[in-house]
Amino acid sequence: MATRRKRVDVSVIVPSIGTTGTVGGRERVFVVEAIRSVVATGSVPIEVIVVAGPQMPAEVRTALEALGAEALGTAGQVRCVDYDAPFNFSATVNLGAAHARGAMLLLLNDDTEVIAPDWLTHMLTAASAPSDGAPVGAVGARLLFEDGTLQHAGHTYRTSIDHVAFGRPGDAPGRDGLLLRRREVAGVTAACMLTPFDVFDLVGGFTTTLPGNYNDVDYCLKVRAAGRSIVYEPAAVLHHFESRSRVTGIRPDEIATIQRRWLSHLVDDPFTPALV
Amino acid sequence: MSDTPEARLARWAERDAVVGLDAEREQLALALAAREAEVADLRARNEQLAQRAAQLAIDADALRHQVAALQRPPLTRRVYRRLRTLAARALPH
Image (cartoon, rainbow over all chains, first blue to last red):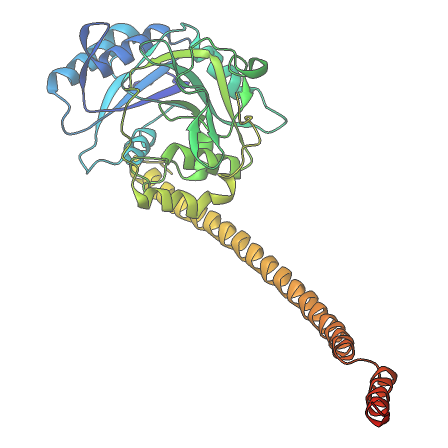
């Protein structure tokens, strides 16, 4: 008798190599805690696909699969897909999406942790609500550093590619409260991005020509070029434990690639004022 | 037809390449339009400058004649001075 597979609404894709770090003075395996927080707050049927780099320790993989069986009640709802090529973030995202079954893809960095329990509901609601008539192609969340300051409240592209209100207090309202209301933005980070599978499929996923930086910028601009809008959802709040002083190591060829494709879209931002 | 992970990855690579080329083509078209507009603008300004230069040359000629005229006393003044000199010599001291 054929086994019916459990229905999946959202496929959560988490590229990871099983890195450990310290949060709040306690050591953790980032990806395990990220997924623990996701499965504890999943408001709809989800699957989690961890795109595991070659450095992923075997015990982390075992912990993840056990976590899925415990939390989601079905073996296989958290599964690892091996990625053994040289580092390319876009390729890992694409590989995860290639194995996805959900109508929605939720791209998530492994160094995140859910804060708002209803985060996914808010993101799904934002994804289904057209902004200015254009169907939504991607939704981003409000991401906070460990100290509670803003890591992400949407992208802004105005002579440079920046995060809106980066480093401000996490509950800062911004001008006219724009940091605390759902609104259209130029782009959102792939550290936590919800996007319909059909949109991902339409635009060809993440470009592997940008392996490290700007691949989410490129994706958002592809989505916008396809007539979809990008939305920031402030009620979806997560921690992003990325270092505030992270050196991005942007290479000249990455700058050249993003400019070659999208220069005219990177000189003015119709969505976010210059001073927030 | 089954949509295997391999088929998806191949399809996305192809689509991304197409979308990327379309985007690059659009950027090049915009750059070309901007250059063409700049060339047209410079040509128009060049035409304006040429006309202005011609007008200024005419003005300069007129001024040059005025300057030359101002450099010599009027004929009557010169004749008067000459006659006065001759008269002074002819008169007994």
